[in-house]
Image: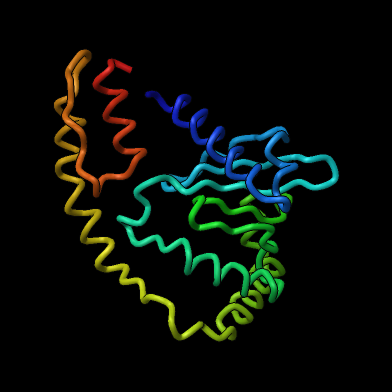
Length: 191
């Protein structure tokens, strides 16, 4: 399966998940525009007329790198209600689905260094850090995640370095991301 096939299958899965709940069913038939900037998620803007939404489907295997979709759902609701992030329309960890209100881009990245933007971001960070963190959330150890990722890289890089058209590669270990496995499959298929 190549990258386009991955996106097609993910979009079909996202649309099916959207259709299972009255709050998002209308989005299941809306035009989707891919937002291809993540290694761990598929994301789209979905335009359902007056209501544009951000739709994200987490890739399988994100838990291997510490993603906790249930904890994320709780935090996103809290941060959205505080007005710091887009409000959550639906966050369904079992379906790997997140839907929020869409926020149009605020400008070019070059404008992010302007003093007024820096002040606004600083104020938002202060409000974020003032929120009470639920005491029962799992603590994420980024050092442990980094060690897991680092341990998987030699095999991934070795497979990619030895790749040539027609070479058949064995399945990558579970610790390697879905996107990395797709790159290896593409390499094995001469893409």
